[in-house]
Image (cartoon, rainbow, N blue to C red; front, side, top):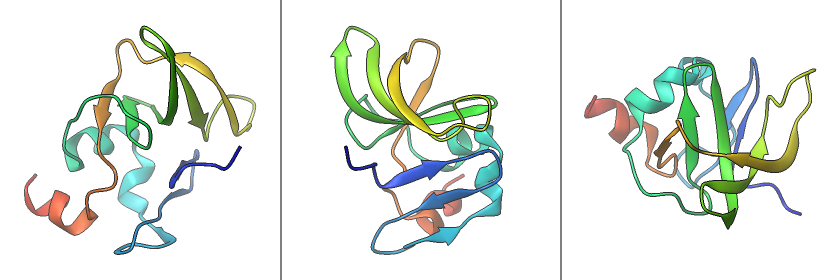
Length: 105
């Protein structure tokens, strides 16, 4: 399975879009900044689920609040795709150009 357009790791967060292709954004190493810097949205493929200390990219809904996610910090320094509940997470749109998102927050 091809990984989504966003990869979040413990020390390396990259956003790929037309405006910010493969740029490391140090301010996004802090997971809570995703909630502050990107607009909230409904769960959909390509969106990010964030809470303090963790960010993951939504790939596809499995059922209810369970989603197949790309998890760049899945524990034990692993990056993997697996099913996780997004209950308790805030869903944000990381596809928004970061400069625009930062200007509004």
